[in-house]
Length: 225
Image 1 (tube, rainbow, N blue to C red):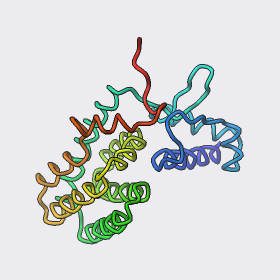
Image 2: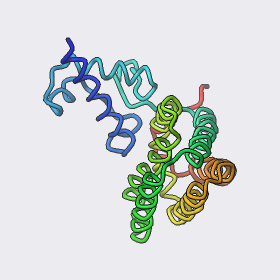
Image 3: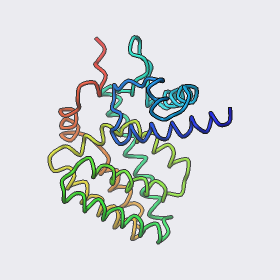
Image 4: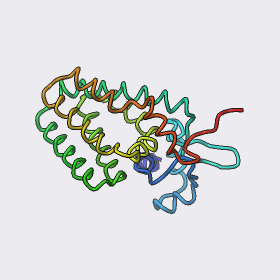
């Protein structure tokens, strides 16, 4: 039983990463047998992992469709981006106050990685580096509860945040915003870091309309009639 529990935990992390990085997309079917074959485990830890992911809202069980990667409504998308912006702003504020020099140096290296990828205009590769940059700030806040809650919401929004970077000019703008956030954190300017991060993550107005225009079919649930 303990072994199954460890396997299930490992599977949760792997499936979360697949959803965050776009390997699994909203609406994709998650079949127990296929997953057990892919990861070389029995169906018991797969079932436990899917139950855990359902509890966090990342997957959903649908009539006649089985278990799928969850999609959300437009209203939920707006509300979740609003919460995400505030959570990440709090992480940035605390990181500016608490991040040791060695972690700031690591954040600088991650920002440089984003800059290098920005030059290639590869939105998907940039997104993965962007995830690492943001996660370093989550960790830098030195509040494990806040870090977990921020990652939970980020995981739910991951497919949509990836799509944002496919908007014309967004990768370059995102990278420029990273530089400003990094500067504020490095200089210990907590309030400025928080404000910049909130603006960096928030999606509203024209930015929201542009995002909705490029969301593929199946990523968002239809409005109830």
